[in-house]
Image (cartoon, rainbow, N blue to C red; front, side, top):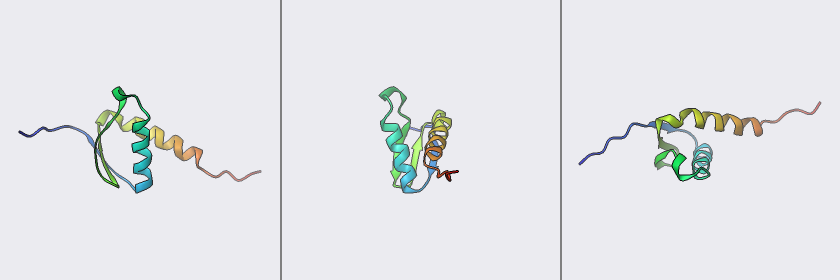
Length: 70
């Protein structure tokens, strides 16, 4: 029997995939969104998590951006 699940396919580099996996692991079990890790650069996640992932990545990038001292 085949089970079909709607989801979102994410293709990214290895460090970003690890960030998303670690972010997922930091959430309580009821909020985890990764359906399957396909390989080091591809993830299959629940559709409703798209905006949550985008905002977490944006926040992460803002924290890691270099600002030239004035």
